[in-house]
Image (cartoon, rainbow, N blue to C red; front, side, top):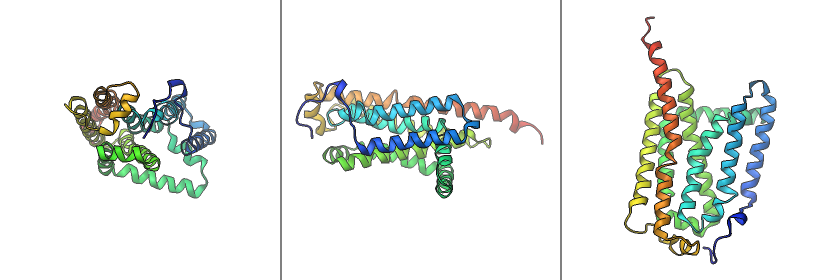
Length: 265
């Protein structure tokens, strides 16, 4: 638990080796894989990867991670960035293919098998996605991560992996031409509705649901109730944009398939 006020924005850095080392490794592997597959490289994919790296930096390096011990809104913003923004950007960048191209043969083959497994199990991925979002926002879980840095880091890894699994399974349906996009639309709408329900609960609750943030929000100069309402709004409104955008893309893919499925053999 913090004892003093939060650092100013210019000094809100979290320079942990547990964050920087994996991030640097990811960038190195992506660049190496992009060089190995330069014939398939597209500018849009590189832009998406840069945006994903920037989102990771905002969530884990500067400034959100430094304010998580003080504000529930920072806690929610960090989670939603790792769950709903970073994974679709990484997948749009073709990061998995780039990283597998840079790995040795056996490691690349194992990665391909894991990717194929993730693609096939959209239902399980959706369940894990929703449970991850809800369970880590239970008041007891939030209080536990405030007390243990190791548990906090484990939580961040869990959130990111759950996001990657869900979005990868969704993107697999977006690329398919077999009508499976309908199932992905259902998964996206389900996740978006349950996330919106939790956000609405935080926004309209008449009492504080996270007493662990009462004193720390005051240290940051923010009313704890306003902080909780802001956290709910962040989860409810802007976080739903990626889900809605990809759902619309899936709907367009389904509409394009209708004339083909209606043609006589």
